[in-house]
Length: 76
Image 1: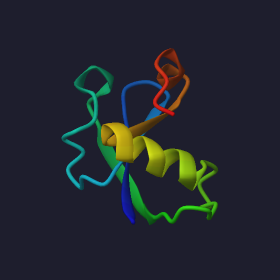
Image 2: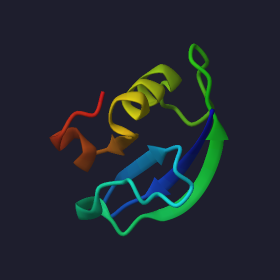
Image 3: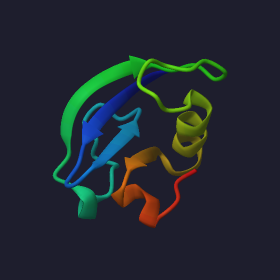
Image 4: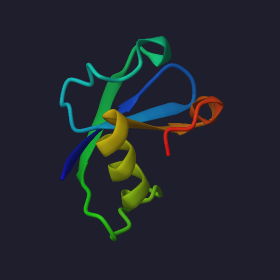
């Protein structure tokens, strides 16, 4: 699955399958696109975050947040 990566305000990154990032939380933006990656369940990408965790969160809420600020709310 193609996952788009965005950097938000503060040390937080958003992962989503929406290329524009429009579904990422507004309060953590503005969101700046920084890349994209193919993710498959059971495989560890070279970006240091579990594909299974990211894909599960995307399946539940449409996105995944990673970073210091993201730990205020759990999206796992």
